[in-house]
Amino acid sequence: MKLCRFDDNRLGLVEGDQVRDVTSVLDRLGPFRLPLPAYDPMIAALDELKPAILEAAKTAQAKPLASVRLLSPVANPQKIVAAPVNYRDHLAEVKDQAEIHNNIRIKEIQTVGLFLKSPGSLIGPSEPVRLRHTDRRNDHEVELAVIIGKPANKVSKADAFAYVAGYAIGLDMTLRGPEERSFRKSIDTYTVLGPWLVTPDEIGDPTRLDLAIDVNGEPRQRANTADLILSIADLIEFASAYYTLQPGDVLLTGTPAGVGPVVAGDVMTASIQNIGTIQVRVDAA
Image 1 (cartoon, one colour):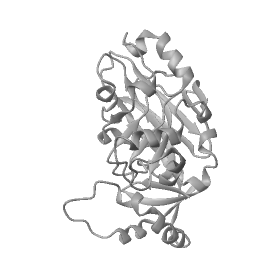
Image 2 (cartoon, rainbow, N blue to C red):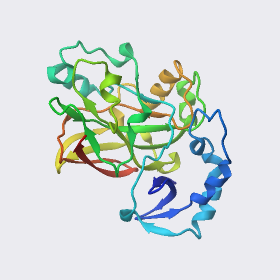
Image 3 (cartoon, rainbow, N blue to C red):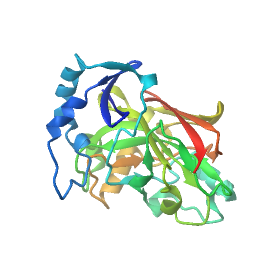
């Protein structure tokens, strides 16, 4: 199942090059009063909603995907947890290029741990990345994004995949400089998620997915998730040892070598096997 949010917060089931509007099933979520839930209600209820989504799709209006504006498939993540330098070739790249690490000694992910990005940085692929501090280098980083489906606290590696609602393409945009990672990576629009959420049954083996990004047609990054230093299951175990992961939380699994700068006017085209492709414009803020 491929689920997207589109246009004015509509819910869609993606079928080929069309999207079927199944927003009516969201009525099952019910009204909310304070305190609002500290998770994404749609993701939390996804297993229960799936039969209703499939039934609604039978008679739902279909639109060409090319005609809709794609939002982030997750509306309200409590947390965006990201893995720094989690591909071996990127670790070598970072150590070799002072412009990337700003002369700060880079440590392995097992030592430095994970970091958080502000949910306020999240956009969908139809919205442009709006660069700030354009006197400094702003880089693209393509990543497999894992979307958590139920509360995960102190989860073992063996059980990790039972907590996954789905997968998406993630762009962890990065302003280079001396500040802390979370500060430089939490700028408005600096986390792109899309084009939709793909449920695990359609992914196959998430530990063997090709991923890539081009800028203006120029190949930049090419890798496979088999090259991760800490695997998807490792990352879920690691993150949930420190935080309770909530439905809708996004785990960015790391980026491979080939990170590079983008400037206003560029177009980034990112793809991940069995998920799809996003095309994201770069503008000035």
